Image (cartoon, rainbow, N blue to C red; front, side, top):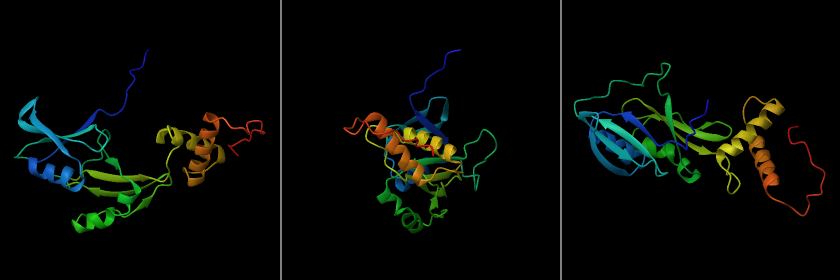
Length: 194
């Protein structure tokens, strides 16, 4: 059977409460420009707000002026969304905890995940939000996912529990060596998985 090939996330739609609290959070806290709104075409009692998360794709929110927050934390049952992560650069990441605290928003503090750093907090409806910053910059023309795939192979071959900085650095070297010719290409090839 043939696959259906995806090209990336088109949009994510969340169930929000009222219009203004959605705008205040998604644009006011997370800086996502409010692009447009229209009625929910499947439910005339709801609005449908569209925000740009920074990559030109969309986060959309269904709103209803009668709906109020009902969770301190959204459900994490099988099939439910655990959290949504958004990328930030290092300069912004270093300021996240101070900026959240200035707004009175509780957070997890900085979590070192080996290949990235994260801070977690909840939106006004209890959805867990992660702001993440990669611990590496991929070689030019290479995606983060390509480096992560190579780093994973190195991690497994070396028996490590999780991806570490060394795996990321070595993965980038391997990717560049495979893609870029060198005058030194007559050198003896090394086994990088040791």
